[in-house]
Image (tube, rainbow, N blue to C red; front, side, top):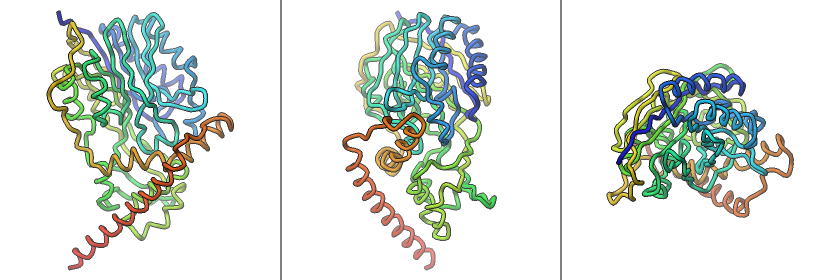
Length: 385
């Protein structure tokens, strides 16, 4: 017989703060969720630190037996819940963005983000595996933020899970302000059309994410963040700044002075929600911070792999090219330098294929830039006519 499970998902402001402060804030919402009967509680991505592009990220990475995971285990035991949340995990030679799930009896499961989003690759490595946590609540599949946009990940969970959890903390990538040292602010709309092609959606965690729940026939818990991101660019990110400024020749002087620029973005703060196995949102948080609780129905047996065609995502090929192929090459140097400065020269060993990957990626970047420049000149000529 199908049965119901009371679940909760939490949203926090993403502004960085001390670990103690952020854990104390999270504890209040965990207690509220437990008091309302939740047995599974999901915290956002990087809930213990906040979200920024800063060298401080390296220092704030923790081992698996560090302050945050120990705190999570204590919270799970105290409230008799399964608790999940993402943090920067220091694991031997590298740093990962890991979603940790802990049970009341101290068991824990770990999923490493497979697809860091662009600048994130300057601060942590990508994982390479999916994870199904075999818990007393059921079989729980795990993702982090941008992972959700990759159909092959969903397919690997199809027919194997009872429920999915996705921890996110996504800034709005196609609407931002560029901040210059003299105080000048420039809206992204003034940078031309490339930015909108690069990330052409207003709600990346909207209906297309919900549709995956209906396709898998399992509920989805999604956590998110609120507030504003105001941050500098990671080191060696001038290739990304070049893409931003490609159609503004008058601003090209800033491409190799990107360390003097800042970017200001909002977060997708209304996508903390609980989706049932039919793809319908049964609960959504509309406040800046808080917790939302709802009952979801789980089948008596794990749903079989769907026979219907998987719902598609509408992200452009330019987005996947920039984020998943060019991003790792562009941010590799920043990552290795940052980890080694923070934790020693033996950290972040080179991957075998990274040198050729960087060479090929740079060729692709140059080709792409030339094509976009040519397209821009063509558009300008048509306007002049």
